[in-house]
Image 1 (cartoon, rainbow, N blue to C red):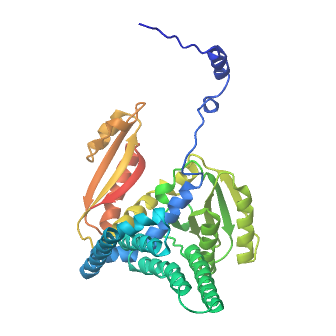
Image 2 (image 1 turned 90 degrees about the vertical axis):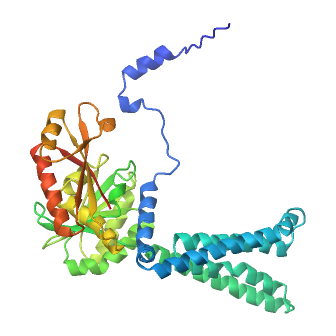
Image 3 (image 1 turned 180 degrees about the vertical axis):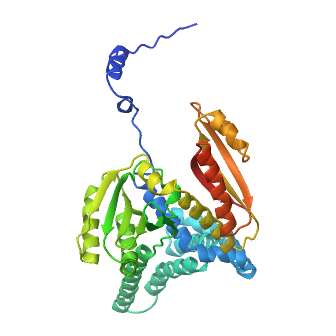
Amino acid sequence: MTIIFILNPLAQLESTLRSGMKDENTQPIRFSIRGKKWPFFAYRRQMKNYYHLPQSRKLYTQTHYKMLRQILMLVLIGLGIFVFIHEINHIANTLDNFNWTNFLTFYLIVIIFLLAYFLYLKGFTSTFRTFAFSLVPPLIYIIGITSFGFWIKFSIIAAIIFITFVLSVVELYHLYQRVVYVPLRYYDVEMQADVYANALFEPLVYNETYTLCAEFEIKTDEKTFNENFKSILVYANYFHFIIAAYTIDTQKVVLHVHFLYKNHKRIEKFKGFLESKFQRSIPVNVYSDYNKASYEKNFFHKDAYIVARAQYLANLLRDLEIKSKVIISLIVYFENDQQYQMFTETQPATKLSEVSIDGYVSAKIDMICPNNDFMIEKNLRETLLNLLIFQGKFVRLNVFY
């Protein structure tokens, strides 16, 4: 038997250095393969999904549309498999002896499966758009093998490439213009203002990179602001920052914006953009909100925000013509078990032992109620009042059916 001792000659030095440093300065190096801007790109996906919501809604509300979409998808998959099996020998020969015809056959198979994927994922519009662009390489090849003169071929192919380039630029422009803002709208008594919090950003609030926040105070009326809001959203989409919320009172509009933690220059440029839009000086308050304490105080933990969030999620179910009752699920916590026990005497709750640490008690509250705004608000406000009485703290809300 062999015993191996592994010694670290620098262990004493490491311990000495660690004892004189803060804990946050002795953490191991961390990095994310998602990149620093992952919250923004996740938010952009949320916007894209909401943009395609009308087609997704048809899957729930129009049976014939759903059947047509499924049948065409199966036809495309079957066609792709048939062509692949039929041409597999020719495709294999391309690896040894390159041939444009065999290459285009392989290209055709890839496009067929890609069209089936887009039809499944996004619907007919994106499928037709993909199909139109996929015709360009075969069209160029067909023109190239015709008996036309060289300059005629060259002119036609150049024209096709130019038109494709122009259409690609137009599509890219429309891609950045494809922005939506879904507000959680309510009136805040403390602010004395109408609040329009970003519903699509809510699941991404807690992140480690978009922690630089700014509040832009625009002295304008609601009509003028709404006329310019689309261009503000497009600007934010292009330069990768997020409009988290905005408030409107009788004198001003306040934009609450989240930027990448090191992007101070973009705040100044956005300030200049707003000043050029509204033709006036715009004060800005910049601060770091790493733990989202400011967002929680101003929006996330307000009773009116919680009610508006639940009603928004329930409305999505109504839009999909899901008419069953809804389950409003709250995740909360209490500072000790006594508070939790007193709360459960007034309302049922389930203790979440796996996430109850350091004396804090986490719990889940499920409420079943009809899917209408009045009943949802009534049940939620009663529960939130009980939480206030027994010093419970709100964490997260979900709506199920």
